Length: 216
Image (cartoon, rainbow, N blue to C red):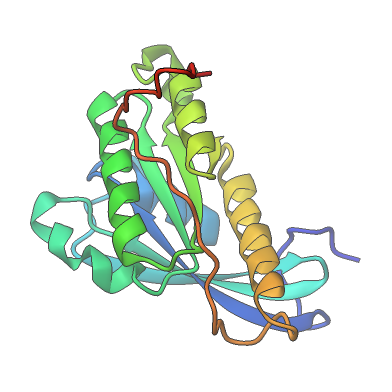
């Protein structure tokens, strides 16, 4: 019998399809992550994504065949306006930054603000610090990124398409969490989403605390 999280087989119960979108600056490695996850391939000469690409992956979650419909979006600024087309009805978003690029992490926070305004309110968020095989060149503080992820209700993973680290775990975690959300949204569990729960996203801009209280 196949272990949980393995590739789906015909003997498993058919399940839902979840739309997942990858967001992040250009050159952070989004395409390499998807290709490693779906096709188990990696190339150091991966070309930049133009607009968006689409791949699917079937996985086993609790004996159920879940299909991840993965949209890999372009990170270049000239394609930024197209973002809402892909994430507006997404079940989950993986926000990718380069561990060696502080600006790419700052951009993740901007994407979160956009998702708060434009995406489904119960969208599942994951933050991936990519290129962890180059950790010795890290410029983004791990504690900062993990604290930020926690503040917005996201899970944080360190990933590397090159060394195939953390990618399987990150996508499987996404599938499990979306499945939990779907089950809680309707009596049938797997039916189409009719009502959305609220997701509280903490603004990263500092605010003055009330005079009688202190920040923790």
